[in-house]
Image 1 (spheres, helix red, strand yellow):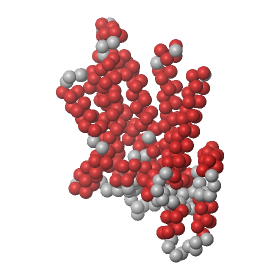
Image 2: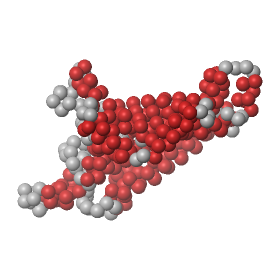
Image 3: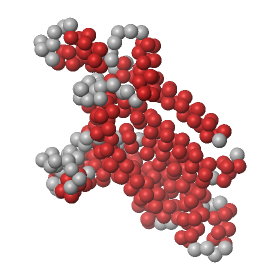
Image 4: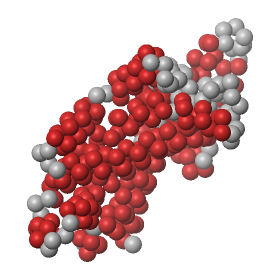
Length: 325
């Protein structure tokens, strides 16, 4: 209990610090969103409506510390304000609609990448020096080194434009009405293949390299030698003795990946025009939509901290040495 309380206090302090940065960061950007909206309207809005726009979006004149305290109060009450770009929709509604698409895409890609990357890393480490190990290691390092934007453009160009096997964008056929029908679900799955392939290509290399390195560090331990001396099968030693202990650091990588799920993959979603949180964040930055930017970054921060807290608790449950400490 003392350990949990210490971690909770630490993560609460980290959340407040992140929320503070989240408040000041958009305000350091050049440009005023209300002024941009007012200017885009041309002569349709009278000058006296400028103050009314500021009041509508919460950009009131006052000391910065007073605005900061108001912002902190709104966080804990769940009031993230109204979007400037998608006015009059509230920020929670805008992010909630995009959340479904991001969780479906990024969540599935993360689970697939973690499962395949971990399995490939285990087998490559167990067969260290073999042709399989060389192919997997080189492929994983190459996939990790290539930027996501390059991977997205290559996959889109080959399978979308050149071969024409898959759609070039959107999350579903725009001519279909969103409904729980086989036609619409099939369209969503069909449109999500290229973004899914791109994300899995980007993510799987990191899990593979991490798991392989962890496994290699453990294969020379005494308990591995003892397990082999006892006559246990290679599969049993590989999975229940080596892989089980090598999973601990990989759990941290999974937590970071889970924490970034709600942030969306900005590059991939923009390239494929996918209506997820990453694309929403990009559009909000272009429009200087402070409420959406702050709400999105706040969700990303909270998710990352919660994921790391779960990992801390999992470490204590998985590692008997930490229990004793």
